[in-house]
Amino acid sequence: MAFDVRGLQEAVNKAREKQKYARLVDFVRAAWPIVEGNNEYKHSWHIDTICEHLEAVSDNKIKNLLINVPPGCMKSLITAVFWPAWEWTRNPAARFLSAAYEGGLSTRDAVKTRTLIESDWYQKLWGDKVKLKEGQNQKTKYELTKLGWRLSTSVGGRATGEHPDFKIVDDPHNAKEAQSELERQAALDWFDTTLSTRGASRGSRTVVIMQRLHEKDLSGHIESKLEFRSDWTHICLPMRYEPERMTSTCLGFKDPRTVPGELLWPNLFSDILVSSLEKSLGEYGTAGQLQQRPAPTGGGLIKTGYFKLWPNNEPLPDLEFVLQSYDTSYTMKTINDPTACIVFGVFEKDKRKHILILDAWSEHLEYPDLRTKVIADWQAKYGGRKRHKLDDPMHPPHRVDVVLIEEKGSGVSLIQDLRRANIGARTWNPGRADKVSRAIQATPLLECGSSWVLESSLEKGKPITWVRPMLHELSLFPVSDRDDYTDCWSQAYIYFRDVGLMALPEAPHEYQEDRDYYRERQQIQNPYLA
Image (cartoon, rainbow, N blue to C red; front, side):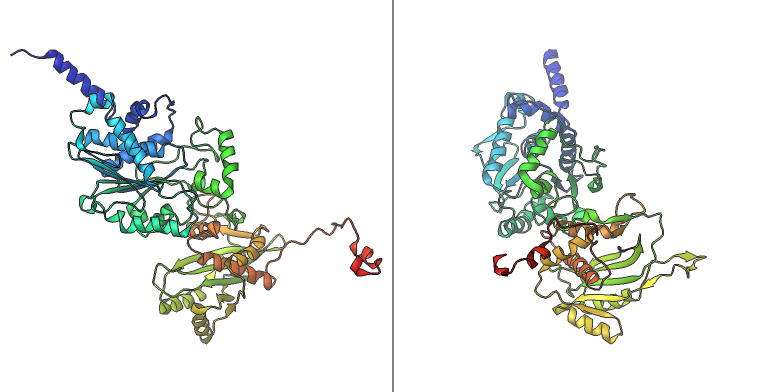
């Protein structure tokens, strides 16, 4: 029997050629011209990052993957076009369900994937196991001879009866409709009640890749879940680098940029182009779609950038007054806002009154537990210094002076119980002022530059960890999912203003009006002629 040397060499060459594309990123580079034609491929580190994490999903090292990335950064091409075609080279029985806010978009990507797997290049290398099944080759769903398939639908569309291995949600919200609560909620309901059950028996994995459009969009909804930190891997890729927001993933990925404001993909999105996009999108559009946070840096209405950091290596100041401000809600239902508390300490610095955040917490509590916790917290001591493990009499700790609670349904009972316990609880009645109006009253006091939060001992230059949820909520107001911290903060600042513990700086004494309106008015005999 003759030995087929030529056939063996061809098989070896084919195996070597296929091995070149064992990594998804190399497959993307090679397949690019088939999908994008003469459009030049421009590589960036973020493409490596997305590909590496999708590979981990394929290998079942990541169960659920959430990626926030600006538009135009190849998110759909990598995730919804190249990845399924690459996965089929490894496992032609894999099943994919892909969805976008509009069915035509997911169908567009499915057609591109089909074009790729039917190409001469793809068929030459993997045609022995990846072929479309005759009679099952539609734009919205096609099947492979090895039992794999791809179904394309819209968010809110067809998904029942299908059990995929991989679920891809690519931009679940239309940017023009994301401000509509009705539209957003429809997408969230579909994700929770329809998509979540698909493929459960097959151990399906989920990839959500999107730009941020609203605090309550699908990304915000996923991040608000209790199981988010344990069940999801999150990659956030803002257009301009923001070092204070960066965290590592389970694969050890960290944003390689080092300079604040450094661009994500400078050889495609230049500084001139990004600046133009920022102008056209406006402050909030830039914050969400480009920076992947639905509020501008330092806050929207409430500019949290005005909070200063009290250095970790400095002792706390001597406190003159301590206030605990509560926004109460004694219910265990997580659909409601929890009870929140912020503790403020007043001290003097540079002949001015300053405010330091001493504590902040938010928790769902039934009324007996809430009452117990408030009484226990009232007994706490704040600040102070130690000498020989004892309180320093020159710098003693300070007890709570006032417990401030809004006079509303859930707070009235608590106020009555606290007064029976001889606790100095004060009611606060906002009158007809709504939450936004109250925040507007409080923000000028924040902008005076006399508000402080503690610096983290582990991360220099960043706030202590327990105050970050409060700062985050304030920065998103009024589009935040919750406002319990915001209510605590605004009522406290207004209280400080009303009792004279905080005040806006006086106008310089040397300021003179250009015209003496009083003298001019005195010279007018008929005031109605003025």
